[in-house]
Length: 391
Ligand code: GLA
Image (cartoon, rainbow, N blue to C red; front, top):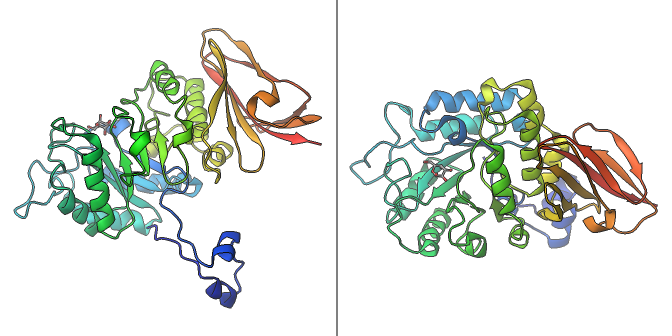
């Protein structure tokens, strides 16, 4: 469970721990929710409505044993279909008694005991997208219920919204969550229909979907990617553009396409929410999801979303400034033939320097270059470099 981090400098001196610079400067500081893009797992992309409490426990265990939790994937998020078809006699949402007989609180305890957090789902409409009861006009009671269950994250969908204005609907839940006093990450799933990047923070959101649902196809990944260009300025610590959850490992794309999908989502500061069967994943899937160098790019504390800096048709270059002065670039080949993709360092935002040190974030190989960064990129694949200027 994540509690707000409050550091008192006096306490720090007494205990002899090194005070983080920010704590020393300000005396005390509360860590904002979602200071870096949330990471974790969600049931929807792989399992849809075929979920039950055993799956959630099995996945929580697998997140630990696979090393994913320790790499940062610490939210276990239950999507649609967890709730019973009717509210209880007091008007509260209740878990489906057949598939979640122990109830949501028991699952929260289970994942908290393993150092992770529990996420849940509802809709800013009368029904969820699968026709189950949802939270429109029940915001206060539902937020209280989630807080009582010790839930840490709410994904709030957009189905059955009666055509009522999005801002009001999402504000109402944002306020209800805040009123519980429990820090609950608020994930706005409004599909980008009303430019939620413009008002997501104002309603208390920590992330907001920018598009319709992802599918497990290369075309879907590219279509969503194109819609992220231009949204960069709206994303940052505490409030992130969300191009939807990962499909890595779900079987519809090639290994190189999944590598590209993951690299681009990392560069976009997307929430890295795995959507596969973690308990049964292949070694190739594990290697992608556990690429520590790319996770570090995604979680860079500066929180600057990458942007497209070259668009040469099927060949593109995306670049993200890192807080240590380096830049991470993705050389993307969208096309059906291998291709050389290149960029000048100054086009990526790097300062002019006599040379540059490059680390290939998929092979770990380090090289140097003078004036041009380029690579042969296979079909539907990427080459990713983190680049530091050298003197
Ligand atoms: C919508 C959301 C998806 C998923 C489903 C569940 O389509 O955008 O991410 O939550 O509903 O029904």
